[in-house]
Structures are given as C-alpha cells and as structure tokens.
Image 1 (cartoon, rainbow, N blue to C red):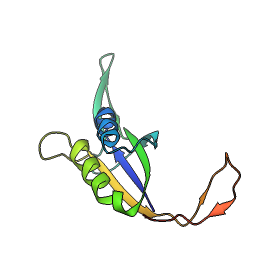
Image 2: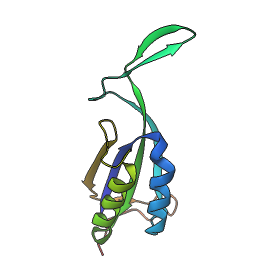
Image 3: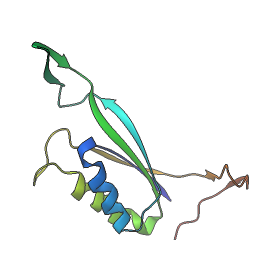
Length: 117
C-alpha cells in the first residue's frame, strides 16, 4: 500500500475530489496548509495599503491506495490539479510514500501489515 500526499491549490479541491470519487476512491483526508515555495508569495492590497503575503494557502489531500490503484490515482490528481492547460508554478506537489503498517483505532484489532492487491 502507498499513501499519496498531494499539495494543491484550494480552488482545485472539489475538482480533484470529484475525479477521485469517479475512481471509487471515497476515503480521503483533507487539511488546510500554508506554504512558501517558488511562487515567492504575493502582493496584496488591503484598505489601500500594499503588503506582501509570504505564506500562501494550499490544501493537502492524503489518500491510501493499493499498488494497482497508484498510477490511476496519480494521473487523476495530476490532470485535475492543473491550473490552465499546461499548469503553473504553485499548482502543487505530489508525494508517494510506502505504508509500513496500519492501526485501526475503532476496532482495536491491533497492528497488521497492509496487504497489497
């Protein structure tokens, strides 16, 4: 099993979520995040005063998938998280991490090794 951590633009959350639902991926975790990267912040104007916003709002999506689901889910996230036809700096990043073990808190079934397939 793998966990996919995708950091995307907040405006793309509903599009990505709907696309994942179409792949029958219903269990996702979504968190708000603030980040600083190659965008180098933005200039904003509030009540006539100009100021620089260094940390920009992003959304983090975490999805646990089996190996056979990995590529379709990655392709879906890549395709639907783009802004514009070719994408732009600040569209986000996707990380893929192995899952060593899973503990189900609700059932208290203890630790078990994830089974791929």
